[in-house]
Image 1 (cartoon, helix red, strand yellow):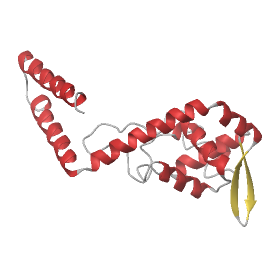
Image 2 (image 1 turned 60 degrees about the vertical axis):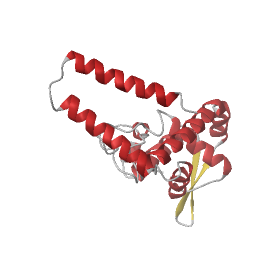
Image 3 (image 1 turned 45 degrees about the vertical axis):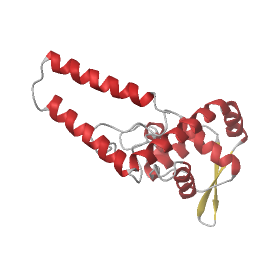
Length: 190
């Protein structure tokens, strides 16, 4: 099932598993508007488990896997072919999936070994699904215009106060106290 890179290795000679980063995909790069990187959608090895989980329900093609993962994340993450295909190459190398030509397309199915690994990792898959659900709530909340405005305002004021002018130790303590109070008040909301 080799795609794009000879022997399943990327342009720098790394194997496909290095590409399981949530910041790749349709929604753009690593930043989320205010500098800083977004948290990954999947940790190391998790995308492989998610793919195996999808394949337990149905044999698939690469594009269909991309769309299914996009559906799982409610459109907030769509892995690029540069993420999916090296990961599929790795799964095939490990004997966890099989790939067969079907009408000019490559049909991907989970193997017995892949099913065993899937069964052994049900607890981890549960944690992944819980985290994805929580993440989707956060993604929806950040789309709310009032929340978006408030967060952008907070970032701008903090940036202006802390990064663009010298502040005294007293001012720093006051800023930290305000942030701590706000965090405490938010955590105590019903």
